[in-house]
Length: 181
Image (cartoon, rainbow, N blue to C red):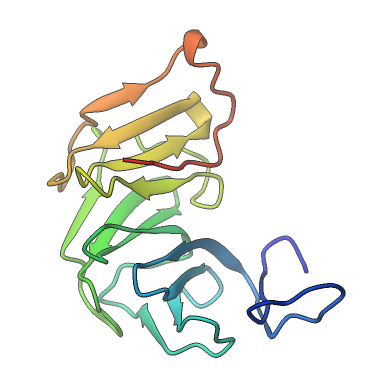
């Protein structure tokens, strides 16, 4: 597997097995409550969606209306809404797509702008998560060694409601993130 590829193995795979499928330029991964796999595919500028246990893509979110350009990571909330982090030419955006969205759809909201603090080097070097309980949006920011938290209803050029940063946190280039509540 090359560094930017995602290998999909058959359920129960064990030992030296070939992947069922390899997705080139795969980025972040997320699995929703229906066990659909969402893969940020920077090469095609789409979110590829795979049914549980399948190596065959079922559908995608992508096209000019989506604003997806080299999506880096993806997260799913409790309602199965899809969140995508994109960083292109010094502009960072978190876009939310409605549950079940496919094709060339407009995001239902975006978070972007100078007040957001989203200043990392690229969308592949960050993590994105959504609280299942509160809907708050968490994003790691390796450039500033911080975790930014946005309100569940955040939209536009808004500041985070919480920033976890500083020497006491011992954060150093945070690339992974998981929210348990």
